[in-house]
Structure formats: structure tokens, C-alpha cells
Length: 178
Image (cartoon, rainbow, N blue to C red):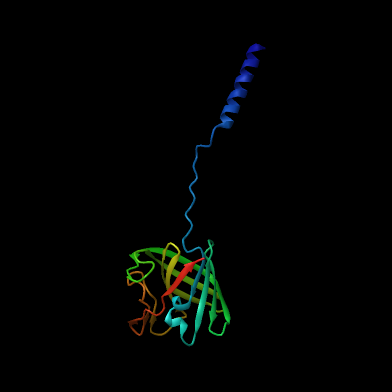
């Protein structure tokens, strides 16, 4: 009986000791995609190509979600809001922002494809770069295709949206993270 009580006590102690040990497995959080969050582009940060007719945009609020969906609210000069929704994919490139006056200079350029669902089905293709709370973002509609228009590429950098074979730097949006 003493032996049985001793074995039972030993098992109980071992059970308690093993139950109190810290878990030695470590979990590493997947880093959050830096584009996730709400970004604002307004005033002179709205590119010339969007500030003039026919768009007359004065403010853009873009929200990118972890599930790869987005919502963009664009406000024009008449204070009319248009909401765009859809999904996006993004992939890193090996290129960096080389625009000397850019707040994202030397940041890695990311390729982005935005598949807009509302108010119309459109695909926009382009690039962005993020440095802390600043984002440079340049996309152009690619589906349905616009005659003579080519999207910016990471290799050619910001300002490489082409119209009729000429690169126009008038579509670079500058955002500040909120």
C-alpha cells in the first residue's frame, strides 16, 4: 500500500510539474501588409491627371483591408462622393522608387492589380511604394483596355503611365496613412 501511495504521489507531482512548464513553442506573427489601413490623398497630393476635367477630384480616401478588399471614396470639386469597391493583389518587385522628390524614395516598389466591382467592373494595374506613413500610388485602367494607354511598371518607376507612347507623370497619387 505504501508503494502504491508513493507511485500515486510521484505521478501526481510529475503531472503537476509537466502541466506548469511554459510552452516552448514560439509563434511568429505574419507581418501585416503595409498597404492595409486607411490612406488620404487630397489637395496637391491628388495628381494633375485626376484634378482636371473630366474627373475634377479633390480628395481620395482609400481603405485597403487584410482580406485583399478595398473601398475608395473619391470626392470631386462639386463635393460629390463616388465609392469604388473591389479586390486587389500585390507582389513585390526588385525595384525601388528613384524619384528624388518623392516621400517614398528608396522604398521598394510593389505591383498592384485592382479588380473593381462597383460602380463598374474595371481592372486597374500599377505600382505603389510605402515609406512609413507615406505612399506613392500610380494605377491606370487596363480592362477594358484604353486605346494607347499602358500602365506604369516597377521597372520604369513612378511617372511611367504611357499615353500614345509617351510617359506622363500626372497620375502619381500621394497618400498619408491615417
